[in-house]
Image (cartoon, rainbow over the protein chains, first blue to last red):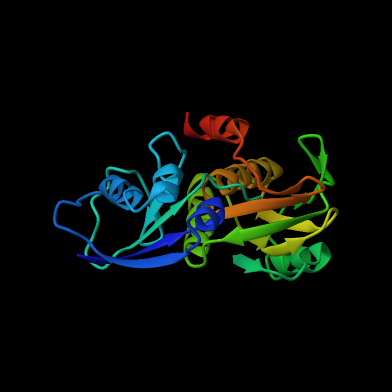
Amino acid sequence: MKISIRFFASLKEALKTDLIKEDLPHEIITVGDLRVYLSKRDAVWAESLAPHKNIRAAQNLEMVTMDEPIQEGAEIAFFPPVTGG
Amino acid sequence: MKIAIQAEDFDVSTELELLRKGIPSIGGINLFVGTVRDSHLGDQVAAMELEHYPGMTEKCLQDILEQAKNRWDVLNATIIHRVGKLLPMDQIVLVAVASTHRSDAYAACEFMMDYLKTSAPFWKKEHTPEGSRWVDARTSDEERLKKWQQ
């Protein structure tokens, strides 16, 4: 399954990227699965996406929880809690 | 209804005029302006940078507006949020609601600000003499949401 993944704010800075494209293995079903999958890249990714980190996610511009199934061709985004206003 | 995400400043009088124009049934307008403070957590703030998620931000603000329209008598509304580099005293956000009576204008405006602060994908980065840091989300903002969910 081919998807794109965007990162924002402190997460973008830590990972030194704002957009990656991935062809996911079949066992990656949910947004939470993707988070774990990406955290295996290296120590920085592991720390930035660690389970204890307060990270929010969106799929196709809608806020979702980590158990949301990923759709084919989706744009997934990971970011810290929002601080606008 | 107007939603704008922009780097440029906004003029409150102009926006107020646009909001009212051609709607004689308006009886009250509530208007909130958020501004950049010169200190945070005991540190001086020299500047602030606002990042957002283009596409999702607009969608989210539209959704907030729709929710407000479903709950209260909203005759017209404006949401403007600035992005990019801002300095202390600068205006950050404008939420204005025009209604038949003041109670709906007050409530809808407060609701929209509370939802914006906890769900619209904006992030603030502060520049202080100690260096730059991303602003942490406040649990008090999440608490405020609960009053709208009862």
